[in-house]
Image 1 (cartoon, rainbow, N blue to C red):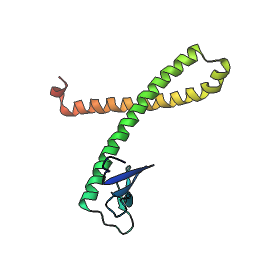
Image 2 (cartoon, rainbow, N blue to C red):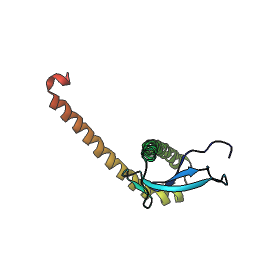
Image 3 (cartoon, rainbow, N blue to C red):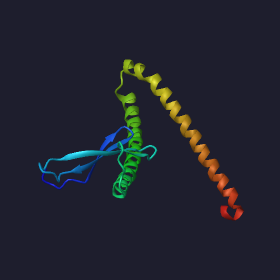
Image 4 (tube, one colour):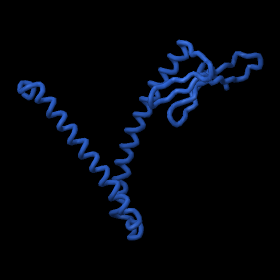
Length: 146
């Protein structure tokens, strides 16, 4: 490895990461990784490994990583939804132009139920937002609506 290594390494896990301190300053010039903590992306918990006490630098690096990771995951989530819209459009085109009767029979009920469920949730959420927006305008008074 030619480039200088970072001081910390985050091994991604299902709900966060295992945090390692990277050390190359030893007699054998080997890369040593010492696990110092586990971080949970869902609730922000940072748990030191064993009896270890994390330094301010450790905590700062971990919190910065956590902030960046949460932003990245949120960006991926919305990107996945945009891809789902594309897949729905591609599925519509497939059903209209390429699908055989057997293929349509195989997927129609599952697609209809999933789309009905999605539509119900989207309509309910849209209505909630409209009601909330209308309540906000009423709370500000008639001058705010103009």
